[in-house]
Image (cartoon, rainbow, N blue to C red; front, top):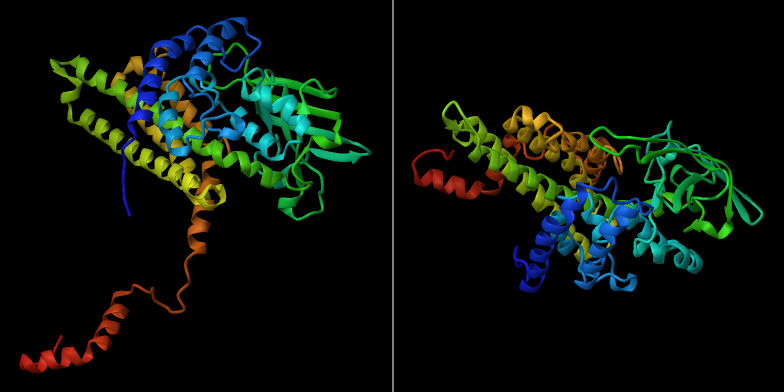
Length: 437
């Protein structure tokens, strides 16, 4: 079995180009546009679309997709290395065509959409001519599909949807929503809901209000409280089979979770770089900050935590490439998702401490990143749920002990060993003129 942590030379050249491109061309755009997902903003389009074209020419566009959908088919490990770079910038995922939730929604459409839906929505979505919304979470049920109350009832050749959804990100920019609704309330818990494509301009779809997030500077929030009132959509706007909404959701969530983690690696690495710069530049009481032992400890702890997290992310990406089946990597993805918010909060928090009052000011990004860690702990399923899922998966593979004491109980192990080697111990004892231990 070979272990190799190197990157092939040709792809490393692409990574080096992307690193310089994001630093020199993309990060400055972050400072002058309000939201990279807003395809209706003329300033955003004037600045971002030429950058997207340069990425296409470099064949780094939509690297999360296989060749069948217009991507280069690099696989998850190479995508992870690229996403580390993109994670430093708000606009970079959009510039490189791999932004959430559009990347996950494209996967759903590719797997479950009719040819007509793919032509109408998938093709322009992949080109970033339009953006989409994933409308799943509900005000009373959170992200647990078994608690949803939004209903979809079949009426002739149309589905009629009624209900409310909460925190439907980018709804005010979107051309269509992917909505999960209950179609069979009496079915087993994970067969009650189905997934639908709902055009944003369908009568009965309304945004109650757009909700902002602390640390985000948009003049209007981008996470919508959406109401569906007698919304009628064609029968063929069902994605997958009736009652398979939970299964369809897993198609996008597995990839979405690991992609968030990939980008978070880049964010925390940037936080460490800023921490290091501050430590070697700032002088307090005649000594540089970096000479203080507690500062050295914060730097060391951050580096260790980042490297541990990065290796877990890359190993999970490698397993996805190897098995080509997200279901076989569910425990790994759950572990990555659970670790992600803690790493970001810890590293951003240490960066705040080292930067002092400047660190908590709006002139540095650390406060936004610290708050973002809580957002990451909720998005795509709460951290606690992933920990529970991981623990249950691990315990499922272990046989219980039919005894009062554990299988590795030392007296039990010693008794077995003495029984196994009884003859040898007896002979050895006799040779030594005494009783063997």
